[in-house]
Image (cartoon, rainbow, N blue to C red; front, side, top):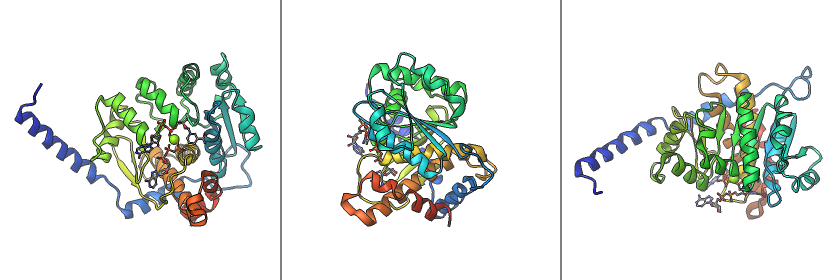
Length: 329
Ligand SMILES: NC(=O)C1=CN([C@@H]2O[C@H](COP(=O)(O)OP(=O)(O)OC[C@H]3O[C@@H](n4cnc5c(N)ncnc54)[C@H](O)[C@@H]3O)[C@@H](O)[C@H]2O)[C@@H](O)CC1
Ligand SMILES: Nc1ncnc2c1ncn2[C@@H]1O[C@H](COP(=O)(O)OP(=O)(O)OP(=O)(O)O)[C@@H](O)[C@H]1O
Ligand SMILES: [Mg+2]
């Protein structure tokens, strides 16, 4: 059906207003520095009186026969950022491989078991946050188990970061995450388009990234959304932040896994610190800004040393120094 000229004009007017509205909320460089200060506020002090586990017990749900690197990158990044314990819940074929990468990870070969949900649920009381999706794949049986794990986590009010194939699951069933205030979604370009189309039933307006992220977050009931890209756009449906921390032009696979694993820890720290420490800003948004800045800084530092041959392992080797530079200055 053809649109009347009046209807078209109203739409155009609405777009201009929406754009102005979202642009008003966009971050300047000064805002970026202020937000980095909020990230510094949520970082727990190191102390000799703490016991193992207090600074974070994180679970990564992902890893299948094809993808073993992604869950490893996410889980090791959580440890390198400062979590005390990092678990991986993966398909049985992936477990020996992931264990062989690192003696530091606790690896549970349960995701393809008929009792996967029960097996993971046993651990939930001991976990502070879950990162769901890196290297999960799209096998229906695995995704059904992950759906059960997500529902069990929500029932226990556990914060969840959803990335990669976890976002594939959410695009099939947005109701799974609708309105859950302790969820952060971290889509790349493709994952964002897929989600946007599934939730808002239309294509993304590529000229209005801020408005698109804001609208998706609102349509999901103010779930925090981080759209990764040349600049990362973050929104909780009320505020829009932009992270343009200098990275590099090297785009090897696995950088998003570093981001989601780091975010698992930062989300836990931010919720523990609460809105007093984040000056009234959403703790999840502050955590997400921290993870984006850190990932990009790791990329920048690794690129200085390795140039075109930079890989995600080189970036992970930079986590300590990047963290100090951004958050402990
Ligand atoms: N070493 C590993 O095991 C890795 C496994 N990975 C896993 O691989 C699986 C699939 O992840 P994908 O990220 O490929 O997801 P998708 O299958 O949704 O593909 C994304 C595609 O979009 C393209 N793309 C990215 N940014 C774009 C942009 N700005 N414009 C246009 N196209 C763009 C990419 O080339 C990629 O082919 C996930 O389980 C993921 O976790 C990745 O995390 C990479 C590392
Ligand atoms: N064009 C770009 N310029 C600078 N940084 C970018 C660019 N695109 C992505 N990034 C950064 O790279 C990181 C990972 O984003 P990316 O879009 O590669 O995720 P991904 O596709 O999920 O990665 P993965 O390969 O781990 O699945 C983010 O921190 C993001 O800020
Ligand atoms: Mg990814």
